Length: 238
Image (cartoon, rainbow, N blue to C red; front, side, top):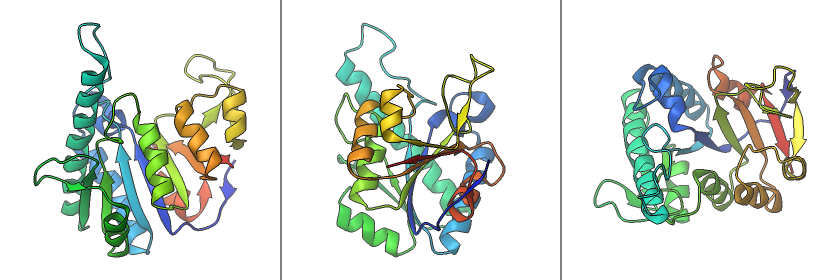
């Protein structure tokens, strides 16, 4: 069921690295990235300010070996997100947008050091900003970075584009009888242990009244549709 929503003026889009890899499961699928870029360009052309966080799962899935220290594994993951943001930023430029890539730590001349003032200035200049490197510390996921940056930048909503088309009461890949929620609250996510975001990110969004839309990236024009017309997935309310 589609749910009609208000129009959003500033959004934070969370993309998974795996989604950008397409069927290859690793690296980048250029056609997928161009498809995302074209949708975002439509939003920017219509006056929507867009910030983006990208996960690093197409390159690194965290601590995969006990021989690697957790802190070092998380640092590798942070760098994977930097690579993703630089690449996707260039795809966005290719389709005609201006971009800026921010990190919470210095990456030489490749990125800019994050500050709220500079990021907001870029958004007002109609630049798409990419928020790479998580929050710059181990033990925090890109979910937490997404929640933190959305709250800092005072976005109207977080858009979570996933492989699954919303929030379900159980894993629809394992349970064909799983039921999809049209709306669900952050408190229900916690009470029912519906793992859409990690615990830290969920609590941050709930406490700071930051709504979340969860929908499928694979549906045609899904990013634009979920911003401009109706939620095709699940609205997580505050």
